Length: 400
Image (tube, rainbow, N blue to C red):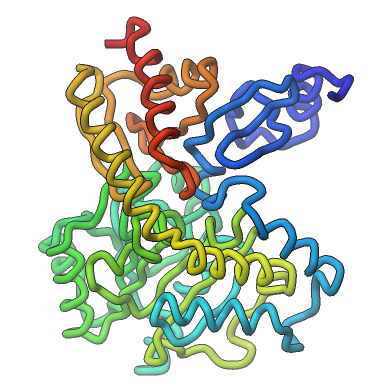
């Protein structure tokens, strides 16, 4: 155990690190399975998974060994050369997605940036013009860089950093008429999350997604689906759009792709593969280390039947949250899919989250009034029961 106290660590962080996060008063030290431990040795059941990143929890059998083996071979080479981990990871991503081309990035935000560029290049090659528009969704979240922020439909995130990049208009999620009203001869792409995550855990309706796909086909518009949070098995399919039978032209993925290692990607069909040499690049993206991580994650998904497990335990989590919703007046709605669930509250989620930490349970919020549940995909029904019992104690503490 370190001689440095928790408070000393937090004070040092506040002094040295830019204040862009309201951090919880916890200094996490290690993880095992679906549990985290702080520097004082306190144990927490993790129902946040690093915001849906640690899909396989912590120290999943074989994962650490794959990373260690790659560190002994090669961490990085530039993208001017081929290397085996990228080839393996790309082939496996193609197989599970049915897409044709892969570009590896460092993050989900960078994947969105690439998707935007790809859509604009596709349109440029058609007519040689630079006045194309992208339709994005209100209450969406796609990232913090200027391009990703420009397609994020949230005033709070955009306002301090305007002007945004041009050529972006906003429609209402799950409202087809709203989308139709924004389409014109300049429209080159429609971008949306298959499930709006930060906006409050709102899944796309099946009719909406299918009708948007039809609109895109009719007008030669590219459909971009953001699967950064809802992809990689979280809903019981490898990618959430596969639950709907609606294939995008471009998709983005990150978070759980690397099992905790920072790697993302944008994928596209051959039709949308408009970029050529010099159109896009990345120094670190797709290096041997991160691709070895993604390669191993994809192997584990297949060999250990992760999707089947998510479907089973996801149904159980859904049922238990539904029971909870009927029990407490402070819960006003329940929605989600698989292991991406949300409880809408008429009280401040932060109050519940803080009490959950005291109970040894890690939860996070979404939107302004939603408790978000995005645990490691390897949780069991027993872990769900443990979480529910801890959460009941939080709700019963004079909250409603």
